[in-house]
Amino acid sequence: MAVLSARIASQLLRDAARKLPLRLVYPDGSVVGAADPAAPTLTLRQPDRLARRVGHTGLIGFGESYMAGEWESDDLVGVLTVFATSLADLVPRYLQTLRPIALVRQPRSQHNNLDQARRNIGEHYDLSNQMFAQFLDETMTYSSALFPALPASWDDLAGAQCRKIDRLLDAARVGPGSTVLEIGTGWGELSVRAATRGARVRSITLSSEQQRAARQRVAAAGLSDRVDVELCDYRDVSGRYDAVVSVEMIEAVGYSFWPTYFRALDRLVNPGGRVAIQAILMPHSRMLASRNTHTWIQKYIFPGGLLPSRQAILGITERHTSLRTEDMVSLQPHYAETLKLWRERFVANRDAVLALGFDDVFARMWELYLAYSEAGFRSGYLDVCQWTFAPSGGRW
Image (cartoon, rainbow, N blue to C red):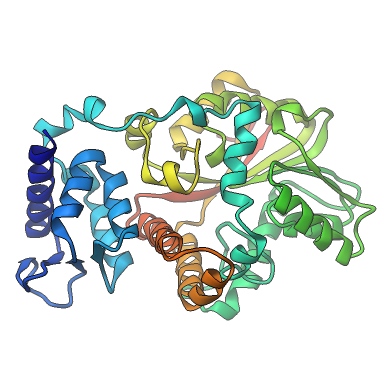
């Protein structure tokens, strides 16, 4: 069975190269696919091992093969963008019917109950504040920026992150005297900017590393009397706030807990207040197809997470809460540009990452993750929105 799976995987890769603007280069120098040498090129170092991995675990194996150095590309984003653009057509329909049987199921051990949620968050965000500093700008903001113009340069990034935060705070109507709950602290930039407006901020996180760094940032800004940063799960928060803000947090909540998350937002916002979130989105059909499967991103980057769709969020808020959409703005091209800048910085600082104690496999894994994410936005497969809700009524 393993031999047959590997043969099928090898043939599917060749077929994809023949149909797509893509080139495969094999160890003997032979080329399959696009005639144009400028087309994105996937160089196979160990094609048999790649085929075995893909035949065994699909896209998880594809990612693991890159981590192991079995294939390379001098245009990693280009290769992955080609795949992302044609994702629905890569596997023949007769094989797609086997998807529920063949794909790896999401392990119950990553289910985001109260205990596991902290472990899942810790696996990513507690890696090392120094490691994240190797590719984030000085604001240490780990979410899509909002640039005044595209394309952008590294020198634009910090200002664009502040611009993104200010837009979200404006949408949530945060000003002097506002009480603000932030779900998902990050490294503290949003809390600092909200407090600078005269707001009183309670920020919660499950990452002890982020809590430590955020508290230091708040203290350095002289705002410790206006900002509390706590280790706390969103399900354990009480009280009511004029504004509840949450930036790229829902992606870590998990499919089963999306209604719980939005009920918490509804419960925690004052009747006249606003909820403002920033959320990465995927197509609804793909979300439904992948909600119970285990992906490379879940295995190695974000355990227990899943990207929602617009339809999922609208359906959940309408069925389970009084929250109704007031405003929704896409930042899709801005995230592609943000990820490009992060990836370039990470690659440039690779030696510094290794000096922190991380190995080459980790560095390849993170380069793939950043390129994979950028390709998702460049292809249009992924979107990211700033989404504002009112606890009753709403325009949509």
